[in-house]
Length: 399
Ligand SMILES: Cc1cc2nc3c(=O)[nH]c(=O)nc-3n(C[C@H](O)[C@H](O)[C@H](O)COP(=O)(O)OP(=O)(O)OC[C@H]3O[C@@H](n4cnc5c(N)ncnc54)[C@H](O)[C@@H]3O)c2cc1C
Image (tube, rainbow, N blue to C red; front, side, top):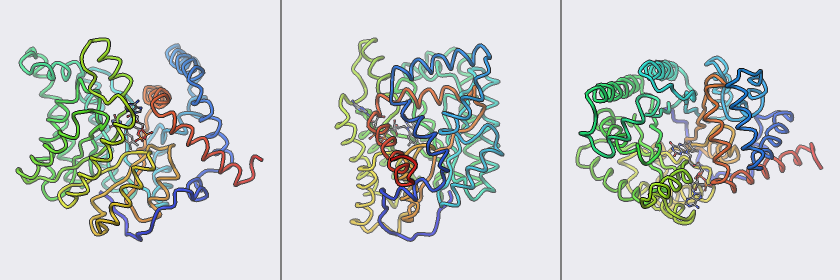
């Protein structure tokens, strides 16, 4: 994991000149127009459906997507394109979490291809100052249906499924072993609750194996889930007993509506909190719980929520944790919340951008998720728009 020399100061989240320094006037205008578009749910729904259909029918829309929404949220189609973005971020002391966004085909061949991409990314990260970590999705390495079955009953797997799951476990182990050797961190994304249990179990096994002297493997905890504070407490206790370092990435959670709708349709109790306030409370409690035990864990705050970030900054200062700041990381998605990312980096905190890359058509599901998340993060979208508007005004590009 790459860490930068500290010059601890209070981050200035209103420093728009700093936040958008990397954007030309044209790029700024484009970003503004895009966020205006994303704010209109009906238009967005129509456009995403039309986009999917057009790509499916091989209509020539790839370039249009590439130069608009893709450019805002993704690093490039090839690693050569990506490295230009990585270097730009590195110049601002922001490191990259590289994320191969192409969602894998659900075949053993597709999973092997994803594995090779990830191993290649680790090899590149090993020699690149700007890439500090790689993010992975377990559903890119194995069948979701098998993970879903495992949540219900481990003995329910057929012989063929057992073999396939064994391959999934081995793929993850290969990645973590290679990453440990290269000293590159692996962030394992959290997914839907109905496949998460085996992901947690496997991730913990990897932490136990590879997080002995350094923190290589991070699990992601979605704090919108009502059971996660308990899970966090138990995980930290198991880590203490077994003597490994916990790598914890805290998020609020990306699938709130999907979780709630599925629970409603299938008539089981919703695993996610019913209100945003409850999610915020749970996220902030988890932050404090982790900060209390910071010497024994590494914490990644993956959020665009300014209040949560300010809470951490305050607590670090109040608890005099400055010396442990190498254990603390902040992360935002590429194309979002630049005012937070660049201000945190400028103030000397380890800060990264999650940078998805991959062929435009294969990254489409990722882009559609960004657009669909819109309802759950409506406040965030209008904040983005407001910041862009203020910067356009500051540059005198609009009156
Ligand atoms: C670097 C990075 C990595 C990420 N990795 C993952 C990952 O691995 N897995 C994953 O699931 N997500 C991931 N996310 C997405 C994340 O979970 C959030 O969806 C997103 O960041 C918005 O939350 P926030 O804390 O940034 O902002 P906020 O705008 O403060 O919070 C919005 C979030 O609050 C929650 N919420 C909204 N409305 C309600 C409601 N009515 N009741 C209860 N809760 C509500 C939802 O979780 C929603 O996404 C990642 C985000 C970042 C920045």
